[in-house]
Length: 75
Image (cartoon, rainbow, N blue to C red; front, side, top):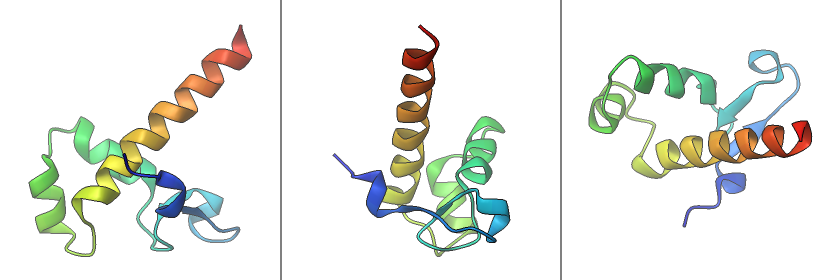
């Protein structure tokens, strides 16, 4: 299992403090939006060669964890 905490970074002042991939300017939301639009992992990695498979899995794990935490707090 991939530890997203080693891949997802948050820096004040970079992309408005949004969660990014390995200190890059590509956000978690960017990747989620590309996936939602129908892009495959391979297409994303081909288009953005600085990304890799583990980065995309980390994004999905991060999003799932965030959703879980929001749901638990709401109860």
